[in-house]
Structures are given as structure tokens and as C-alpha cells.
Image (cartoon, rainbow, N blue to C red; front, side, top):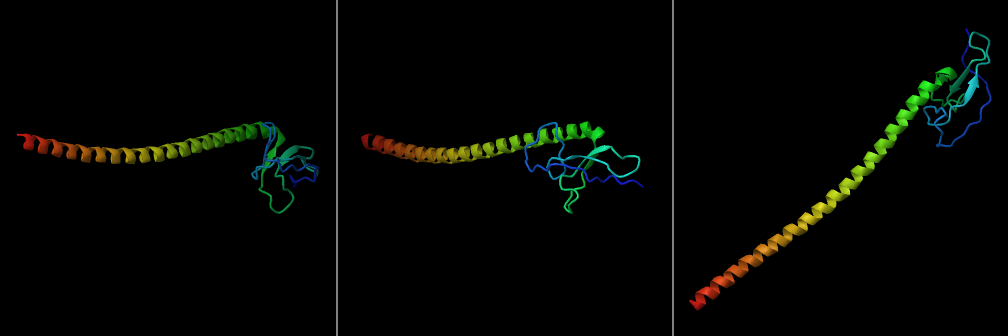
Length: 135
């Protein structure tokens, strides 16, 4: 039975920035394009594999080159979703800061209202005393 493994040449890039035309493995690394070299029905067929293959820490990523458009589309969707998640997390942090500032402002206003209530009560007592002493 033919194996899908290959000893094809590939340059391994550790850059985390990939263009939309590149396929990445589950390590989020560029998946090199390889060619099946073993005899069998798939000999000469091209595929993308884990960037760490044949090392032991391979993630198991494998995709035939003619199936890559589906993978790219899905990876693009994942990237869009991750971007949106980051945006929402940032918005959430901004909202938390705003809530914190509003709570501090509320506490200050409550203190001011309490002081105004005390001052109003004192003024009413003073008016009452003045009215009683004049009358």
C-alpha cells in the first residue's frame, strides 16, 4: 500500500504572519507544499503537511493541494472570527473601565448629595431658630 508521506524539500518559515494564499498547519505555521514520492496511486500528488514533519512534534495536519481552497476559506473565517473576538475583548475592557469611572463618579455624587442634605437640614434649623427668636 502506498504511503502519503514524502521526503520533499520545503523551507520552514517560523513567521506568524502569513498571507491569505498560504496554508498553515495546526501549529499556526506555514504548511509546506510536498510531493508524494513513494510508488503507488498517489505518487507525484502534491499535499500540504505539518511544518514540523517528519519531526516527532507534528500536529498531524495534512491536506491534498487540490483541496486547499476549502482549507484556506476556513482558515480565513477562523482568522476573521479571532479578529472579531479580539475587538470585542478590547471593547469589553473599555466598557469595564467606563463602568469603573461611572461608579466612582456616582460615589462622589452620592457624597455631594449627602453633604447638601446635611447643609439643607442645618439651614432649615437656622431658619427655624431665626423665625422663633424674631417672633
